[in-house]
Image (cartoon, rainbow, N blue to C red; front, side, top):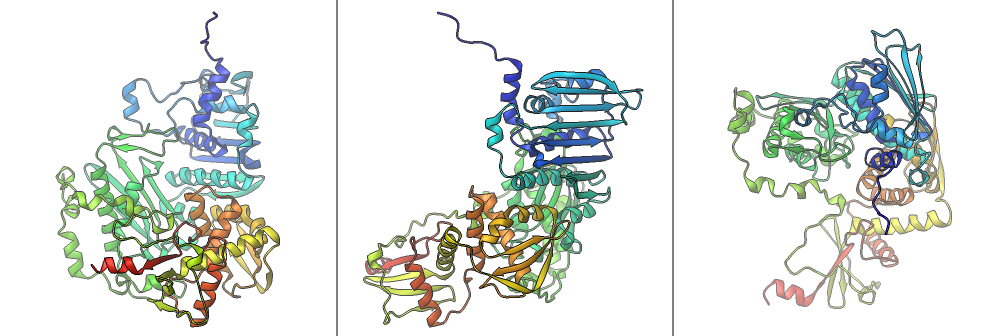
Length: 610
């Protein structure tokens, strides 16, 4: 019998390794931008064509490479940043794995030009399918230009899994934003299909945040800065009125590397408790600097998930730093007509931060850890009860996660024959949120918003299948100026929006004109509706893998539904209940929560001990 085990050819091994590192064009963008930063560049240019599928090029004015280094950079496990295993635990650079260029060269056609200041000529290298096709000296400016063309040209199955150009472009903008946010002292530009999307002059962190996330944050940022002997925290958080319904503008960086951390997110959220509604999310851009030896960044191929040696101390510092910043920011009662009324009614908005409250905050042990020297290791151990529900806090009601009630849970799936609404049925609204309807052996408790979401969802689903929703032309078309990331999303969903009754046209760089809206949308409210729609769309994009149309329909259903706290007339209640029971699936809202619960007489009697 012949032997079965053989060594894989290098190009196949590289393609397999590339699957971990280069999952989509945005993955390559991240790796190339990080290499340019590590090269000490002060100006970095990103050029994209066909959403990165045909071209991704990064040009920097960094240190450049020698001929040998340029050739070696495409070898697997080749890196200038790690000499021994100990170096892996003291990483200060961005790209360090030693597989990025090898992985890119395995799945794309790569052209590299590089020159050091001390060299008379630069080096030009062409690589395809992990093999060097051409190498020659050239005239070139100091720095490096690397262009990868025709991504996954030799792995057609992988190429077929890429999303639409608009979707892939959105991922590229996300990665570009994260790197550009980390290094405001570097000039970054992004050109896509011969159009400049970003020109970010070197400047302060606040300027960079406004450049990337939009001018609406310009006067609404609160500075966070706390230095201790264990770690430093700096950055900005949004004032309470900037909180949104989705977690879009939230950025954590550890030693300048973007990370995702539900645990630290909870620390920030808890600092905002009672300042923003429970289902809202604050904006933040926070940087944590600490000894790399107490951080393990090598947990995940994308380096976005990391482990801390003592995450409870990090949690306490983040929470205290944000609380301290918000305490310094004096909230005075003002009326903002563009602001959600539920935010304005919060006590923290209406009542200024008094001297008594300041002294109470300053007397805490965590606060003392910031204001007194050498206090980091004296931080008291966090009470377990304070942290045990952090995940519940992070999982908002919008994600559909719900704890299971152990007490006498009412039935959420009554059979259709128990549902009867006659002209004599008495409907009652409770706390402007629920509708009661008598049933054969008890009563139904209907959640008006969840029920209306189900009704609108099924109507929109039917309309999008059969024919477009009727559009009313705007008498005075509204112009929208958007942050580049939001503009990319709107571009992606414009065709589907048209099917649902919106007529929106591009009008120059990151600007759009709303020419028409669905017939039931109130004129003059178009901009607000698109803003909320994009927020909801981002929420569904983050949480679940839906189709574009499905995400839009769910977003519109949530946006247009009658909200909790709305008073309904008898006629409105009756129409809502009738429409609900006419739905194909009347018992759950689109996100899987019950639209009503059925309380039976025997259950009620048990609850009262009868």
